Each structure stands twice: as structure tokens, then as C-alpha cells.
Amino acid sequence: MSVAAAGARPAPVSLGEAAGVWARIAALSFGGPAGQIAVMHRILVDEKRWIGEQRFLHALNFCMLLPGPEAQQLATYIGWLLHKRLGGLIAGGLFILPGALAIMALSWVYVLYGNTGLVAGLFLGLKAAVLAIVLQAVIRIGSRALRTAEAKLLAAVAFVLIFFLAVPFPIIVLGAALIGWLAGRAGSLAFAGGGGHGAAGAGVTDADTLLGEGLPEHARPRWQGVVFDVVLWLILWLAPIVALLVVLGPDHVFSQIALFFAKMAMVTFGGAYAVLAYVAQQAVENYGWLSPQEMLDGLGMAETTPGPLIMVLQFVGFLGAYRDPGMLSPLWAGTLGGLLATWVTFAPCFLWIFLGAPFIERMRGNAALAGALSAITAAVVGVVLNLALWFAIHAVFRRVTPVEAGPVKFDLPVLASIDPWTALLTLAAIVAVFRFRIGTFTVLAAAAVAGIALRFAGLA
Image 1: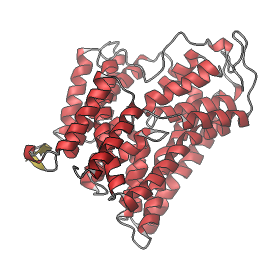
Image 2: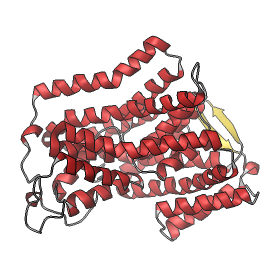
Image 3: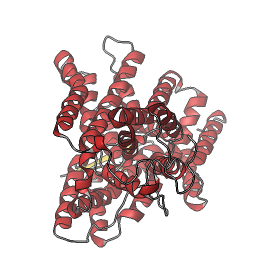
Image 4: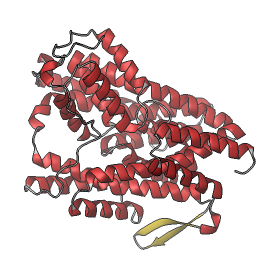
């Protein structure tokens, strides 16, 4: 579909044409939610003019209130606005598909050839670059979210709670949401501001777009549709989990993967980096599915492939089942474990959109909800800082000493066990990102090449 002339509303677009555009967006969706939303904004608002600036940002703010990856949910939302439920399924599904296929292929390569010089060097470099990228996420989110003393205090408390006291991430999120909701309801500006990863600019007016200013007929709330979506998607989401629990029991690895990632799907507020802190610690320390270094490798995969960054959970599920295959071959068990993690993570995303989007207009201007979102975002800064520090300790140092004193529990690095080449690569990546402002993909590629070179030179 060509770009419409300025001042003229674009002609209606077929579902097939829309699917081609969504496939293009999916193929370009690198760089985490900020980059993915920027790509969507450029194509859907500026280029195609299917949706206006204000409606785009309003939809994004709604998606920011939901658990799950906001970029994928935004695609589902806009696809639903354009072509009803089928349009939402196509838009949201295509957004996931390239990353799911890429992570699955890389997971096979990882377990089959991970110890070879080429692959080991590749992940050595990616691991160092990922540390710099996570630190950049802390700075980026913090500059937007921590605009008041109260927000900064909440971020600091969240960091202490999760790093030193091992308070579960869901409790931190719910506590922050309650604090922000109460503050907003009381008229406080303590958590005012925030916003999302959204694109800025003068924008295209809603009146000059394909959707226009009105609400499509299918987008009006109807209780029959609400009941249909709730029943259908709860069955699709929960039936596999119930079946696994009944057939295999709660201690089987597939049951554990299904329950754990279904729980994550309910509390993944604040973006992928926030929830990955909790996932990494639980998957490594509680379930023993993978090591901290392997978690970093998986995050490197997700950073360098299209689709939601949270797709790294597929890699976690893959390794968990691969190492506990039961009667299956390890590769097929890993494949099923990865697909299971992906399904229980993303299936509820469609439920949230199809259920909540028809009521979005009722949420506009709600101060209490805005306060809850901003407070969650502030707490997420502390959680992501915990993720960066946890990754750094386990990647740069070969040994750690567990420290436990009453409720305090954390890992203290053994300074003599520092890995000099990983530390050097990490420092170089930090300089590239913050001093020279080199793009994420370029930094990852350069670090991967450096890691391979060090590996073949016998230095790492």
C-alpha cells in the first residue's frame, strides 16, 4: 500500500495487505521495546497513516498498564482496531514468530556446538555487550521515571528489597502499584509523569488517518464478546497447564515450566528487563535450569534477533527441559519446553487486549491508574539495576561467596577470580554505548567478533 497524499485519508486496506506490513514490522523489530515501538510508529503513523499520533500513544499507554511485552500488545491492539480479532491475532502472532523461530534455532546450535571455539567466542562477546546494554536500560528508564524524590526513593527501596532481601518481583510490582494508585487517588504528584517508550513528534492527526477519530463498530464494548474472549483464551492458556499437572504431576519439568512462566505472564509489568531479573534468579538458583552465564547468552540471543526481548524465556524453557528430558530425547524435550514457555507467556497477551481494549476510553485521564503505572516504572529502575549488578557479578567474576545474615542474602564476588577478558570487553562495550553512542546492534556485532578472536587466540 502506497503512502497516502498529505491531507487525504488513506484508502481501506485488506487483511492480506495488512499482514504483509505486519510481517515487515516483525522482521525489523530489533533493539528491545523502544526500537520496536519506534519502527511501528514510523510505519503505521508516519508512512501508512493507518492510525494517528494521539490514538497511537493512547493505545501504548494502555498496553503499558498490562503485564507482558508492550510492543507485541500494541501490535495486537492496532491489528484488532483495523481488522477485528483476526487482525489482532495476525499482527500479534507475526510479531512473535520471527523471534521464536530464531531463538529455537539458536538454542539447538547452543546445546550442540556451544563448546566449539566459534560459538563459545561468539557468546563470550555477546555476554559482555549485554551487560552494557542492560546498564543503558537502567539509565534510559531512570531518566524518564525518576523525576521526583518519591520516585527515586521507591527505586532505591525496590533495589534493596530484591538484591539484598530476595523479595519476589511480583510483590515489589504490586506494592509499587498500590503506592502509586493511592498517591494518584489522593491527588499527589509524587509519581506524576512517566510515559512509555513511545515515539515523540508533531504527529499525524487522527482525522487524517485510515481509522479516523471515531471508534470502529466492532470496538464498542459488548458483554457477549467479553464472555467469549474470557472463556476462549482462558481455556487456550490454562488447558495445557492443567493437562500437564494431571498427567505428569507438579514435579515434572514441563509442569514446572508451565506454571512458572504462566505466573510470569501475570506479573511482567515494566518491560522485559524488569522481569528478567526475577526469572534469572529463579531459573538459576531455585530450579537449576541454567547457569548465570547461560542466562546472559540467552539474553544476547534475544538482543540480536527480531521480536520481543522477553523471547529469551523460550531459551530458558528449552534448557530446563533439555537437562531433564525424562523419556524423550534431550533435543525434543528442549524443543517442547521452549515452545511451552513461549505459549504460556504470550497466550494471555491476546486475552488482555481483546478483553480490555473495548473499555480503553473509560481509562483515559484516570489519575489513580496513571500514578500506579508511574510508580511501577520507578520501582522497575531498581529492579533493572539489580539485574545489571547480578549479571555483572556472575559474568565478570568466576567465583562468588554467598552472604547470609538474617533476612539479608546476596552473592559477594571474589575479587581474585575476576575474568580479565570479559571485564575488558564489558568496559569496551560500556564506552562504545555511553561515550560514542554506538547502536545496540553494532555493539553486539563488534563484541561478538572480539569474543571469537579472543577465543581462537587462546586468550579466553
